[in-house]
Image 1 (spheres, rainbow, N blue to C red):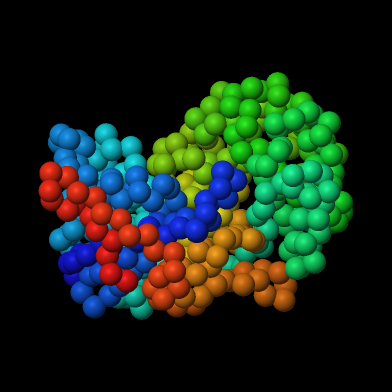
Image 2 (cartoon, rainbow, N blue to C red):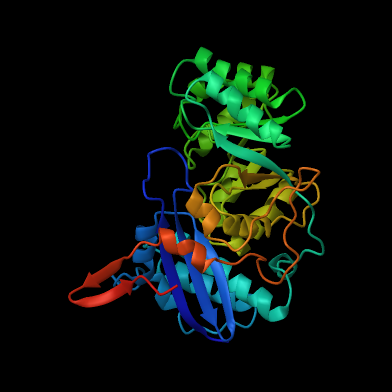
Length: 390
C-alpha cells in the first residue's frame, strides 16, 4: 500500500474557555492507503499542528512532517518505524512534529490492523486484551462543595475511581487544598480510588508540594500527579524520596526518552502517556515495556475523545496488572461527536476495547461537521493547506 492522503480536521466548540479541559477542540487525522482509511487524533494545538504538517522547509532538519509520510509504503510495522525515523531526522528542529506525527502514527496502525484483520494490540505483541478500571477524570470544583458534588456524581455512576485535578488546587492555601481533597474523599466514599492532579502548579517548588502530602496521605490518595513541570526531574526525584504517596506524571513527554527519564530519575510510581503527544502507539509501547521492567505502573493519559481513548489503551491493554486507566468522564460535545462509537463501562464498572481490526473505533464525519473549522494556509499565493472535505 501507498499512503495517498493525510487529511487533518480542526474541530472546536463554539466557545473555548481557559479551563484545563482538553476536550474543547480537537485535531483529527484521516489517512488513506489503498482501500483502507485510518483515523487518529493529535493532542495539541490544532492550528500549530496543521502548520507542522505543511510548513515550508526551513533547512534540512526542519522540514514539514508530511514530506516524510505522503507517498510512503505501508505494509508492516517496520514501515511505520521507518517513517518515524524520517520524521525524527527531517523534522528534528520542528518542535510540534511529534504531536502532529502522533495522530498520523495512530492512523497508520489503524490501517495496518484493518489490512491484517487484527486489533492493533495484537500487532504490538499482546496475546490478550484485559479489562481496565476507568477513573472518572474531572476538574476540582470552584469550592470544596463543588468538589464533593463532582465526586458524588461519579460514584453514583458506578465509578470506583475518581481523579480531581487543576481548578483551584495549589493556587490557594494548604488548608483550602486539604478541604478539597477531603471533600473528594467524602464524595467518593472510603473504598474508592482517589487520585489528585496538581497540573504542574508548583513548577519546581518541592516545599510547596511537600506541604500538601499530609492531607493526601490522610485521604488515602493513590497518587499525586504532575506536581511539577514535565522536565523537572530533580524536583520529582526529591519529592518522591520523601513522599508517602506515589507520584504520577509523563503526559508532557513527547518522546519515549523523556518518559524513561521520568521513571529512572524522577522516580514516579505511575507513568502516564498520551499517545497523541509522545509520537503514537509504538513509543508508548516502549515506555510500557520499560515501566514493567522497573516496577512502575503504566497509565494512559486521555482527557479528550473515545477515538483517543481507543488508541491510548492499545499499548498497555495486554498488561493484566496495570488495570487503572483515565477515562473522559465529562468531555465536551465535540469530543463525543467525532468518533463513531464510545467505550462505555460495563456492569462491573470496567471498560473493554472493541474486539475489531485496527483501533476498533473510527472517526465520525457526520458528527464532525457541526464543529469543523474552515482553515486556509497560504504562502506567497500558494495554498499549503485547506480544510479537506469530510
